[in-house]
Length: 241
Image (cartoon, rainbow, N blue to C red):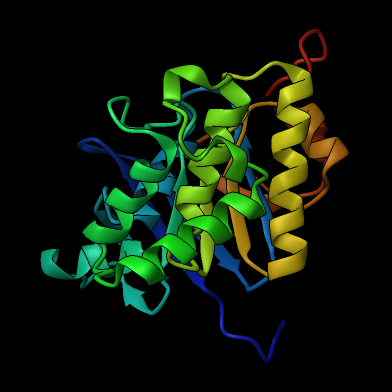
């Protein structure tokens, strides 16, 4: 890893949540091919880190860079170009409910500068093939299960060949069997494409079954640990953190 440039880097970074700082002194490097979990109890700053990565939240202090953009100096007009290098997957899918699957993906391509309709159609076929949803291209979101909607959301995240996929509780609204399918898909994308993945989750059982690096948030800090370190804040009655 020493000879590789990180795609995400924080050094002594202070992370804001709203008007206050929620994490102090974050040191974190994400390299191509990494699979990193950000875990911790509710309110410990997990999602604030994600929002800082996509330049939705300001960097409160220290140094931070994502895909070559300095988060401390990034200008408003540069933010859309940063986000084109990222694929973001949300817990609640965030599909456009008045458009079918293909139209959802086409909308994103047009919004990010794709002009050639045949190239766009080919890219849409490629990403739907990658997530096993090409046969559902003409379905409306309400005609899909939760797991299928999340697969479409992952396809959307892949459209611009991102350097990193950032996933905020991507299995939070799914039953355990469907969640396993989504995790298998994400780990396959990570393994086969070398796409770095940063995933926020509260579900420790997923971390145990699909190993990766683990960043643990708590007490206004976020540090890398192994699963055995201090029980990781685990609530043994729920299997959640």
